[in-house]
Image 1 (cartoon, rainbow, N blue to C red):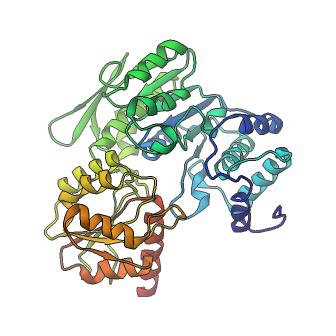
Image 2 (image 1 turned 135 degrees about the horizontal axis):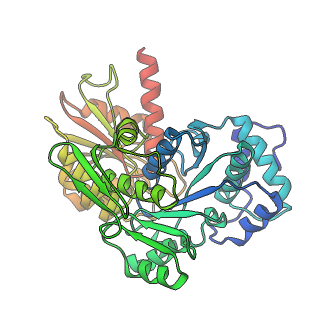
Length: 434
């Protein structure tokens, strides 16, 4: 039943009942309701797609644009702990009341149309952004691109960060087929940046077919890692040198940053973005669940570092493994892992295994999660190492705490639905110790 005058939690529970399918790809439903809403569009809509790095790219895009004085709205998914994280206006998450008001507008315009949880939320974000009279909307594609609800909103430019295997049940079981779906964000005469030097043939072919202005890493713009801790960017009309590294850890974040600069350059939004501004903004960016480093007072010996990362496919796990290898650790690495049943478990574990000394399996907070016992069995069979089983998030954190010796590090990874509950549990522990 429509949750009039109800809290946000009731609305979110109700949204899950509107469609018999959690994922129902297609633009028609979203487009119909969007037309009825008659929203005011901004001068620029930036659509960010790709397999990995979307959230980081949104964060960097948003921070750079805000630093130039533009008013922005950023829509991302899924969230780590609170739904409000998904809809951000000028760097501030929208309140429960603001989201509920937008939900009510969408419901009034829905007229009985079936909408998924994600479609309803995407439309609500558009309502919030329209009412806020913003300069730029930054929209993260949820799944694929071609049939994702965000693609119902016409972009003035798009970014495809990279393409690798993920969501194979929905997008296809090889990179070229998945790339066709990602390529669906491209439009005739509209710039599309591709952020990886390894570009699928289907991206290039689709750009030629639809007349998109494809801007390729390594060809139309280049990233150069200088000696020491700086990097340089070279685009079609200028170079920016002496850049400090982003605050987000991992070499791949340099590729994301370079692609973001090209995205803003492609639509004339980078006029105020120079080395000084980039060095002021990007090194200070942090993002929950992206190689997030934490030390919790009173947890373990007090010297254990917790690393939190949402890597949930082989490519992301490989990047995470490289980052772990680059970070100094004087002890062993303990991993709390929770995965969904549509993920490439073997690929994720194979990428991480060389860096992990002890495994703990937990059940991610999703009905699609692999049960902890089954996950532990598969990890043990694949790695030849014992894997502890945690019956709850609290037990997973406690097992890691008790297993860790001084100078060991504890990794939590595998899913947004693993990282969020662990962060919540660490927050609970931190409060009880203060």
